[in-house]
Amino acid sequence: MDLIEAALERRPENKEADGFRAPGMSRRKAVQAGMFGLFRAAALINGLALLVIVFFLLKNGAGSVTWEFLTEQPYDSMTRGGILPCIVGTLILGLGAMLVAFPLGVASAVFLSEYAAPGRAVRVIRLGINNLAGVPSVVFGLFGLAFFVTWCGFGVSILSGVLTLGLLSLPVIIGTAEEALRSVPQTYREASLGLGATKWQTISRVVLPAAVPGMLTGSILGLSRAAGETAAIMFTAAVFFSPRMPSGIFDQVMALPYHIYVLATAGTEIEKTRPLQYGTALVLICLVLGMNLAAIWYRARIQKRNQ
Amino acid sequence: MNKRFLKEKLIRAGFFVTALVSVLVLGMIMVFLFSQGLPIFDQVSVGRFIFGTQWYPTAEPPDFGILPLIAASVAVTAVSSLIAIPLGVTTAVYLAEIASPRMRGFFKPVVEMLAALPSVVIGFFGMVVFAPFLLEQLDLLTGLNLLNASIMLAFMSVPTICSISEDAIYSVPAELKEASLALGATHWQTIYRVIVPAALSGISTAVILGMSRAMGETMVVLMVAGGASLIPGSLFDPVRPMPASIAAEMAEAPFHSEHYYALFAIGVVLFLFTFLFNICADYIAGRHKQVGAATL
Image 1: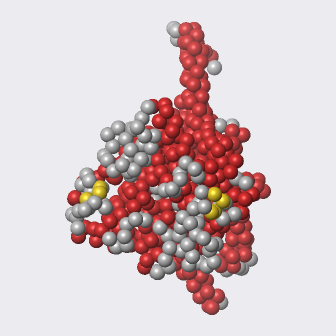
Image 2 (image 1 turned 180 degrees about the vertical axis):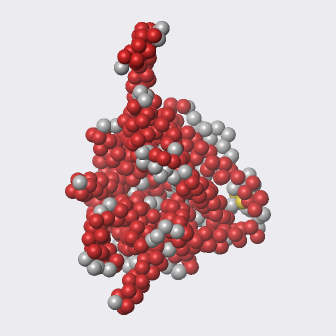
Image 3 (image 1 turned 120 degrees about the horizontal axis):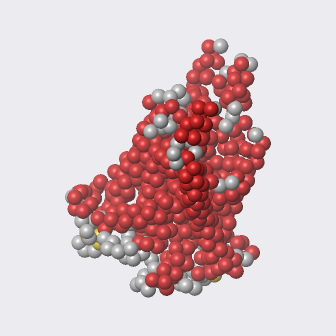
């Protein structure tokens, strides 16, 4: 102690250095406060963007969303009436896509997180999934057109659309399912195996049931993504106007996103149908954001329970 | 016991085969894109297709030069990145390092909801709200232009950039942060001298994936970019990026016509662009994987 104090005594500018440290520190603190302000502003900009979009849709669309709008067929060459067929079509496409993607995605995730040992096979599979996730939706649309619509002969139909959308949402489902499997404590598996269960018994009776809530969250997110997707169904499933509700998987369907696009860009009376466009967009984001909020809320509940 | 063993083997094989579906689908996408796109090169050479500056697919005789479309795609991606990268990365730093748990609990869902907004809705917003606004403010010929499309695209790639960067920042070992703070650095100095450099590979991956998303995004550029197949000269020029051309023209291109093949060939080019982005992202993420404090 004495030595240190002596050393400090001997430093000539000791006093000044002490005196300078305070302003130096406060400058650094000021820089920090300024930068943190900027970062906070960046986060706020995102919030603002979301708010502005939702605000304009609500302001201009709320007036046209009536009970009739939600429950009637469109008429007068789409300039009046409701959007029921679009809502139904979107739900069919979204749920159908999950029917395709959920089993495939969960099984892929089970392989990757429960069975696979690190190696070339896993590297290839991961590369495949990552790249599939990066394929633009319009390219999925082209693929759907060339493969399901033409080559398989399904035509422009619900089936083609559902299969295209299912493959498009596969990476999302795999990602969330893997995360759900990872969050199952290792001790569950060890306990089950220790009791003499086989690997498959452990997975099917212990791991999967524990991971189901997380996987459901993922499938809600996948569903909402599929429901909002436009480019992938343009050439594979969607039709601008259909006089009747779809009655089978080989029918074309109307869908909310495609309806917005066509009304806003190619309709004969773009200005006149503006309220309908806003209303349709509002219904679509309510559907999509509602599903997302449900998933976020559900996930928060699971996390709380797990802690 | 032997039978049980066999069953286990079979189940494992079943899961393995299912996991291969993603790879298979990716392969099939390539096969079908190429098989439908390559016939156009019987009509025009690869060089004339890619570097040709005239895109008049329905003229007589037709011109299939997609340079304006490629230039437009590159331009909207670049301009939107200028906005999305700073915004996405700073938001990620805010969420991971600065925000209180309460603010985090609020802003994280906001970013997730931004990611969930259907692209057609953002395109619609750009068309009916933002384009008139631009027109009024800047006295332009058209509000549907490169700038508008880039701004709308930026808000589509911010969530991608933000959430992946945030994960990367989170996975920086706490020892690094603690060591820096213990040496007397402020929190801000720690962030930009220690945490961000340590998370840089993850952040780069995020940026590349965000750009890939912007390049492949269809509805926004279809509705907002203006649709003129010209090589953009200014921010306010209407442009026609590759996805917009495919989406707008596929409906009117007769089945198995030259135009149809040309659109698939554009799909091939677009696919190759995004594929390259993704391979880069994968390479960086794998190459510089942060495994622990000791690797630095």
